[in-house]
Image (cartoon, rainbow, N blue to C red):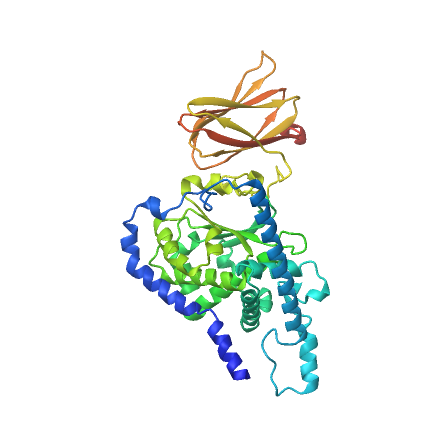
Length: 463
């Protein structure tokens, strides 16, 4: 095949993001009003809906044999893929056939250079023996259902795209600026160690910021590049040698611009397609919280362009189920307080190592948390959050000495969507009693922690 024909084949295989984007925008424009009239229950999946449940119990022996057969098939596919990648690198055709016009010295130089090729910081040449190489190759195999030829073509397209897009240089660029500091962040990890990448679209409701970010084609392309830069930053948090080789993406759509803001909608779809085609299996889960009804319409339309594996990664949480859903994947001490967790920025009182306890307050009952205070001269600090909210909350200090008075720390108030952080200096032993009155029919889960801190009274320090 000539170089020209090879280039033509390459162009045919390239994903047409622009065409898909236009088709998606057109479809949304025609159908969004009609679909908004559909039942919200049909459009909005429940927060805990992650996939179909098994339909029947298989015989254990048959099931074990089936699992073993799949393992052998996957192992065989990986071995074939390794050999194919090795041959392509050593033969200098991984990125396409080299030009015949090159002199012998230049051709040899390219061959040696290709042997050092990496993806996401991991060498691709299997014979180098890097422990992360198989982890990277498996991502392409999984994305293509362990079809070696398809996985190989996907890898080639990804490497060509990265070269054209200058993706390896993107971390060195100044993109976004301070205006977008509140839009994305990488905070802590989930229960399995995956980095948590948050994207918050609420700030774009500000018209000035929206125009500044999406007002021209050049600005929109810069925003897209900034989004890819954020993904590359997340990849730096991964460890392909030790198993944590994917991240969790959390998208918060609270107060986000509506469907009429087509620039943001279009770029979000384009980013998702770029991730699917060039960052396979790097997103372990895609959690969308506080999604308005129009977003579910968009997702239904957009799903036509997504692979089955990509669609299965989505988890949706309506506003009333955000905390419950996120706590399935994230420990309370790692979940930001604005989402119902206990994590606060620059926390001087607690660390992630501080133990978190929980109680269940049944419907139409009152339960109590008792924090013991063994001696005076301490400041007790406590942290509390309620999953589901909507309970009545009260705090008081009860001294051990019957001759002392009780101290009301917090009169009864209704907790709705906010956590509690409080502290109190104790001059004598006793206990802090927190009462939680659940006047709902459903149970409420309460997460809390506390610790004592030695304190010198102010009147002593002022002497």
